Length: 275
Ligand code: C2E
Ligand code: CA
Ligand code: CA
Ligand code: CA
Image (cartoon, rainbow, N blue to C red):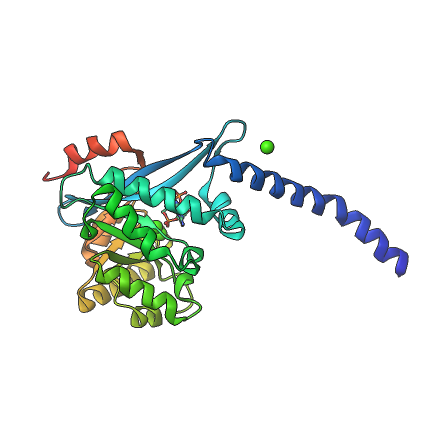
């Protein structure tokens, strides 16, 4: 049994160390990426469900490594969170998003994703205030998107930070609504301005009648709480018709536009705003 155990250990070892090595290399590359100018921001429009008039853009981070090419945020954001690199990267995203949005016409908002790790940083609120001041963007045009993970610890410091941000006039959205363990109880712990219905509910709307009932219930919840409900990941005219009928107030997805570089966002404003 002993030699079998050793054999198994030897069998798994090279594979494990290859994975650890690959992760270590990605981490080294990620550490350099900000300084090397390998990041850029893209912006995806959010429009009124009823009229398709533009209301704002969500900011999404892109990393193009010279050898690896485009690395997905799904791959590098978790690594940035584990290593703490999300702090400088997140600040860079927020500053860049505010700078860009300051060039847009007044009612057009910019949404920025915040990682739970950023809430562990006591200077988060000051960092946001500085980004607004440096850009001249009014607070009511900034929207911060957080997931349940931010509220998981149920710690008072995080809730206090969220209240501080909201008191400044910044809007707070609950991202990926409905996929976590206790979305409803989190709605009770903080007065969100918007819920973003997770893409997984929208994806098979045209095939799955139950999903339409769920989306309708979430939209009704938003109406009762007098907050916006954004349907994420709307790809087809059929999905758009259903989320409209369900009463979602806003939509975002490839049907309107994929995320685009800043220059194209300006073109989209010309095309979609006051349409
Ligand atoms: P998310 O915040 O839920 O962002 C929406 C994701 O859905 C984006 O993926 C977007 O490109 C994609 N998407 C939008 N419309 C459609 C559609 O119609 N169909 C499909 N299939 N997908 C659509 P992306 O850009 O790959 O980002 C993935 C995740 O990475 C984001 O999910 C967010 O959690 C994270 N992320 C991206 N940028 C940042 C950032 O600057 N900071 C932080 N903390 N996280 C970020
Ligand atoms: Ca490398
Ligand atoms: Ca988001
Ligand atoms: Ca989302």
